[in-house]
Length: 182
Image 1 (cartoon, rainbow, N blue to C red):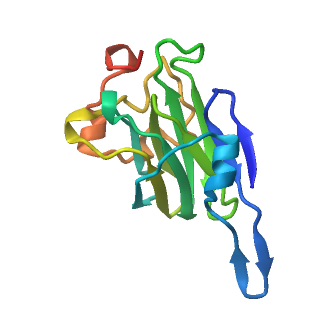
Image 2: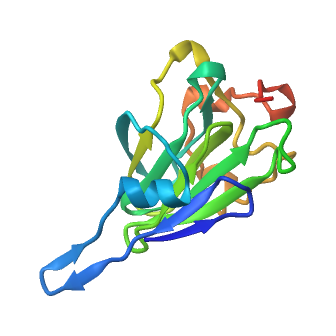
């Protein structure tokens, strides 16, 4: 695997070594020893999966306080733009983001540490998205930031009228009004 730290410290793109032949392909999606050597120790406790159609934008989500989550995300089918926004108030990169294309073709993964909001936009007809988390989901700690906050300025690469949001995601606050990490 190739581990590439992004412009925001602690965020990593992980590119697997893919072995293709006439039967298909094989790759190691997660190898604890190698992951910890590059990224550090993270105790993933749950795997989640979602399926979405073109234009669906999920996020920007995070869990507050003691329920903060690190995530290791990837796409099994389709293509997305995946985004991590630094919400660590004391960070030099507070309010900045990393955007990475994840697809079934490139098989990349993105590691997002605790203290970040996360979201993704589906660019293919449909996408199956999976992710590992290192903490339980707690509804009382659920939080988010509106995807199009001009202070953050994410370039989503889609026309605004094609974005499909949940009712909850339509009502998310801007960064200036959100609870952030110290």
